Length: 125
Image (cartoon, rainbow, N blue to C red; front, top):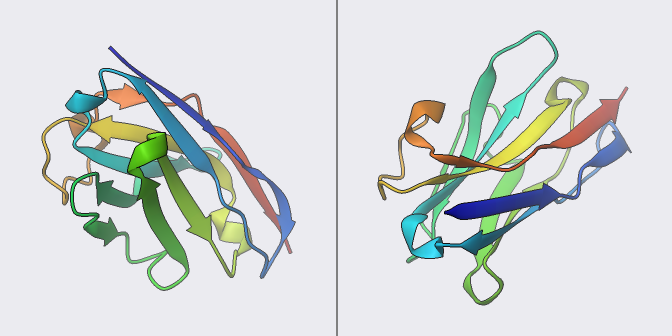
């Protein structure tokens, strides 16, 4: 089994920054790709970014390209999502997730088997 614990959300003004993190424990060998998703009130959960543990290749949703950066620290089994120039429309619960397939460009949540509990990000205008 794999356990994910995400944290680091909060309340920030528009234009500000936050850096949620996700600590992975358990059978980490099953988590070849890590992703971040978000779910705004009344909306579906959508893909934000993904990173491969080995090599660090990344992939982003168009809506966050140039503003968000996903990174990982292999020694700490931790994945980060640096979020800059935040907008009110970025307000959502952010979830980290693990994709055992190793394919980086799978944006559907159905390819992610393990999920964190979510961390709230609120951006005020």
